[in-house]
Amino acid sequence: MTDPSPAPTPHEPFDAVEVIRAKRDRHTLTGEQIDWVVDAYTRGVVAHEQMSALAMAILLNGMDRSEIARWTAAMIASGERMDFSGLRAPDGGVKPTADKHSTGGVGDKITLPLAPLVAVYGVAVPQLSGRGLGHTGGTLDKLESIPGWRADLTNQAMMDQLQDVGAVICAAGAGLAPADKKLYALRDVTGTVEAIPLIASSIMSKKIAEGTGTLVLDVKCGSGAFMKDEAQARELARTMVDLGRDAGVTTTALLTDMSTPLGLTAGNAIEVEESVEVLAGGGPADVVELTVALARAMLAGAGVTGVDPAEALADGRAMDVWRRMIAAQGGDPDAALPRARQSHVLTAPESGVLTRLDAMAVGLAAWRLGAGRARREDPVQAGAGVRMHAKPGDTVQAGQPLLTLLTDTPEQFDRALAALEGGFDIAPAGSGEAASFSPRPLLIDRID
Ligand code: URA
Image (cartoon, rainbow, N blue to C red; front, side, top):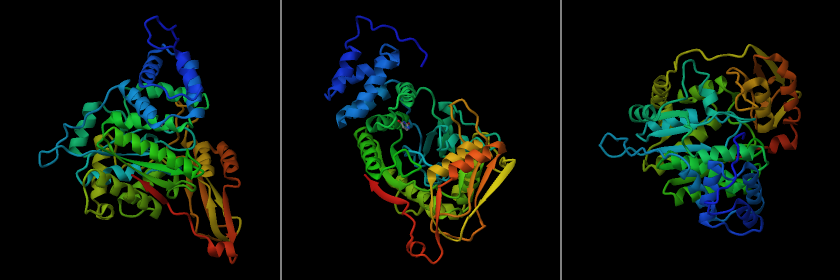
């Protein structure tokens, strides 16, 4: 946000202050106002302080469906659109494409087994992903722990890999929705990230510009998610599904729980290791359940029905695609993954049933151990993170390992342990609470 903001030229059709006032006074912005303000901000004609005032007015006063759709279209128009219609299926027809987007959570490594799993069934998966910021990890950070693996591909290399292997997970190029990049950086520092119209248009502009035919959204709610509250998560899911549909993309959302981490690992290399377990037909039940549910939704959207994706995890077909996908991007699927140099075990203070293991606490601990970054330019430690030895609903004995903290920088243990204080509850064995406890369902709802 250091670029200068030139004064508006006399040829500009609108005045930013008028647009800000209109939204401040709860009016509906016209399509022309929206097209102009998004474009003029991208060109540097609308100043950062003006866009930040408008973003705050949108956060406070909202936008209706047609405003959100127009805002999204304006952000798409700010950059390039990808086109996968050149991909060929074995019968010579166009190969269908499907993609997944998660609103982010702790231990969310689902993209790793999911992309190769869906590709097994002849659906191409162009998974453009990002790096992590804050307590949720980024898919590219996880994959970069595999020796040799490269996130940056040219558009041609991506197309070739989609045709030959069927799945690619790579960095989104700078050309997709550049208006969103600029606006997201501004929202990050002006307390305006949480506006549902702005979140929905930000995510969907990139996904629609990417050109996928089917999109499945994993909208998370709970302590470790962006949306803590189910009603808000539902509204976000509904808004994104409507945007996708209006743009001709077959879009479905699964509303899923993020009150506790997914699986038994939160970090980079340790999440890759767990994903490989899932691809080998094992792995934690919740990771398998969500991978299979999302695969089913992606396949159904792409017109593939009557298959059970769990079978391709069990019989090694998804693993075969994973190995080819990693190798195609320079990675060695057989290489040993980096390990943290130091570990610290946190034990259960009493015996009973683990009734809560808070996603935010674990995410924050993993982040402080070095698995995540505070600023976009920070490096991450491949081996850092948290291994969980029990999940809500499990019986634990006093003194047994509950969590193992991993890092190369042991001076971080104290701050990670502080993040975990109050982050779990154990109901004493024999208590009514222990007897009646049942974990929350992972899949909350589906929104079409
Ligand atoms: N992720 C995005 O890409 N945009 C948002 O606004 C929030 C999360």
